[in-house]
Amino acid sequence: MNITIVGTGYVGLVTGTTLAELGNSVYCVDIDEKKVEGLKSGIVPIYEPNLEEMFLRNIQAQRLFFTTNLKEALDKSEVIYLALPTPPGEDGSADLSYVLKVANDIGEMITEYKVIVNKSTVPVGTADKVKEVILSKTHIPFDVVSNPEFLREGFAVEDSMNPARVVVGSSSDKAKEVMSKIYQPFTNTGVPIIFMDEKSSELTKYASNSFLAVKITFMNEIANYCEKVGADVDKVRLGMGSDDRIGNRFLFPGIGYGGSCFPKDVKALIKSGKDDKFHFQILEATENVNAAQKIILISEIEKYFGGNIKGKTIAVWGLAFKANTDDIREASSLDNIKILLEKGANVIAYDVVAENNVKKLIGNTIQYAKSMYEALENADALFIATEWPEFKNPNFDLMAKKMNNKVIFDGRNMYPLEIPEQNGFFYKSIGRKTILN
Ligand code: UDX
Image (tube, rainbow, N blue to C red; front, top):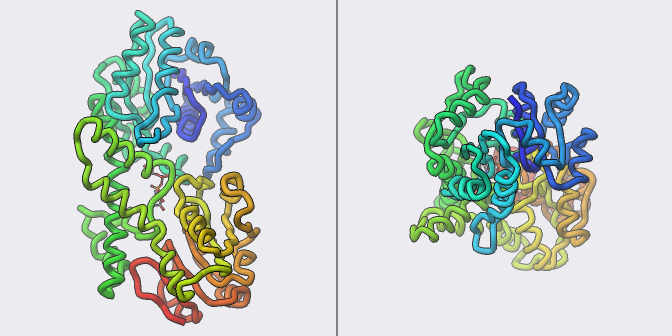
């Protein structure tokens, strides 16, 4: 099938590459000429494991093309995916101006039946709005479909090639047939395709992400309570997670959720609710608990240093909002660094791939180390903000040699308690007892 993808951001690029990998001819359109030039010459602008390989393979096979010319791409394609940004406005609502502008252009340009597929995360009712805008511009028949994306950063290729399910919101049999054909390689291998109306599909995306945000946050509260009563959250997690009604995933406590999806989607759903005079009490509580959770270790750090961290050097391991990505949007590391600096501490940070993104944001207000051990040179304490695999099994002897104090504040529960204990470290993690040195 011939497919256009409008928008070569994260979702657009991954979706386009995946659809090309499934054998379609894919035309990716973006207004950013420089970006398109780069993509054409084989440069992938985001870090995502295994994406580059698949991307280059499909360019070489002449199934993946890039252009700034929307009209040219539309004329070649039966299906048009919209993968456009929907940034949150001041009040948390999703800004649909990019989506509606492209809908307008599509209305002006199409000359035969098209299926327009909304991949962006958009509020309930957006498919109808897109339909309205296109209808105001053309008499050519078309259908608008909602087909939300559920991929995780760091696992984008894996998730898009092996989805848990495909959700398609459409009230048109013709469009459903087209979507079934596109996703046949998945359904053939047993992946369910779930058809529903457009609004339910749009809400499915928000409900899924918000539910996971609630699940994590619930576990964070349980972890905080574990500390109060002397229980161990690792044990509680195992005990709970082995009930398959609960499931053992997304139960890992830490310094809160971040990233480009959960915070934005929780906020947007609360805002949509408000617009519809509906109060999402659980989601409001989730937002508040998460905001506090992100910086929960700050008071512990202060306590350790007798209430004053002025002039202390804190090494930060990890800047990305989670491992396997260079994305720092809503990263807990940033909230903590901001407060540490405000309180007069010096910060020296190390991340596997996210350093440049942080530099762009906060420049040289902190120091950057080239390795995890370099960051520890004369540090008074280590703060772990991201669960990068290379932090999992460190050389504690070397750490002790480099640091002024053997002190770890671990926001990602990286180590079984006996490990820092055996190595003589003070170790404060989340929801478990504190190891004193
Ligand atoms: C998420 C959804 O998983 C994905 O389906 C959706 O399409 C986009 O949003 P992503 O933001 O890439 O994906 O990250 P995810 O792996 O889900 O983690 C989100 C946040 O939750 C991270 O900050 C992570 O550290 C945190 N988290 C996750 C926990 O604190 N504990 C957990 O047990 C799991």
